[in-house]
Image (cartoon, rainbow over all chains, first blue to last red; front, side, top):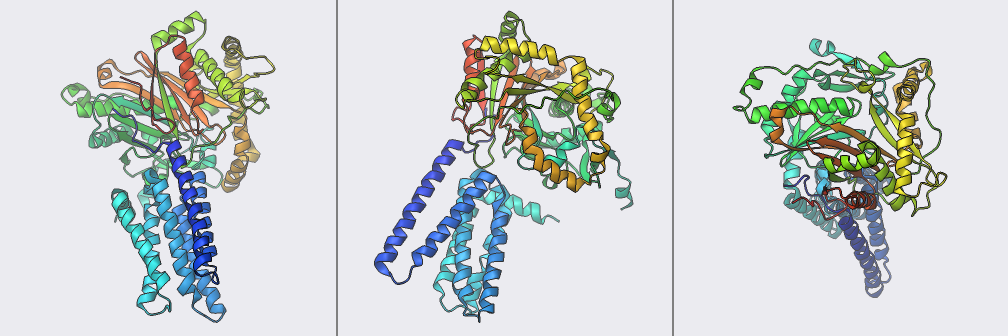
Length: 188
Length: 431
């Protein structure tokens, strides 16, 4: 007979997080090297590494402070995107906000959510609702592609792909939690 | 609308006032009782049992509302929610997700839990309500065996009076120590996890050892606790401040006429000056604990502590501060306030169960929510010949718990371990 539902052991979680940080560091170094050897004129690896740093600051904050970071992520996603579009318009609308900024924000937020739902597997229930909102808001880049509003479709398609993958993973591993949360939030 | 406006309401008791002001995800101020039964739990019967128990203990059928100066309780017309246990024990009760109830009943396998927000009541009174749920549940799941009990009503007698206001001494002077306590050092567990380790102790063997040492069970276990902290945390971190153990005291023992179902407890704080008094062996610590208990556990001292706290809540200047300001001030100062205690150990004693119901129950557990400053809290309760001593912890190592276990087994006392596996892979040593 078990007295408690099985929870992730604290030491195992620490080990997983340390390994993931190490892998991220290796990926960051790898990106810099690839950037250096392929397109040294465009420093894209810097943007990617900034994104990785952002992901880890957010994840570690959420884990240590025990806050519902999914709600913060959703608000950040909407607010940052709106801010970028506003600046873009104010600067003469060169469409960098919809071509680059919004898809990048969508990628970073979705990757952060994926890590959080793995690291905080047993507490996923509290993220479920905002996870759905994030996935819903992540449809914006594909909508912009559909409406032919973006010039460079690559990043938008990648962003939507990652968001779709995020949703798929959530449905596979947390279907029961998501279903319960949807019933709870939308009951009449 | 008319019905809503006429809802019953009542003030929070003197102790309860502070809890909603400082409570949050970090300071849940929740305690839990669990009953491990001998059969798997049926959720439908459990829900029915809770509804039946609420009919008798209407004081639990309340929600918290905000007034201008203080919070208050109001009748809760909604039904209680019964869920399978998913989260860690003693987590903050999010009222909005709990139909506004200030307690939460969950089940897992053969175990029924009740998490109670401390504003509602204290451990002893919470246990009365919990026992009523257990009685009703057993009756509902064994209707043939409890035919008579189902037909009749078990009488319960209680009031919701503020026991503190009725009994405090206006002249008494506060005896609170101004010395800060040693705070347990170490990293906290990630993900908001709470470790629960239960040490199931044979009471006959424990009592025999206590008799040999001429002390009570609470005194002996307090001494073992201080010794474990000293060996595993204090010495290694070169502690300077005293180890202060807060021990809640049931005030109904001192005011037997009180029938209140609200909070009615106070506490004594043992102050072990490890270095100054050279408390470096268990024998010395036990002698100190016995003396300090004798000094502090007198009616006069108990009333002084209680009255000091009542006077604070009754202070006219504090009373007129708007609730939002009280919240801000308390939250800002709460970490500092908590630094006056190293650890809390609450022993609710024997859980009295009517004989006919005993064969259906395996054991009882009690747990208290740990906090950022008091990273470990201890509690114990006894059912039949087993005492379950529980460590709830957010400290990312279980050395104190292990030392406690090793000490007791070293004295020849039979101890078994059960845990939720957060800090250790060993979940059970039971056969």
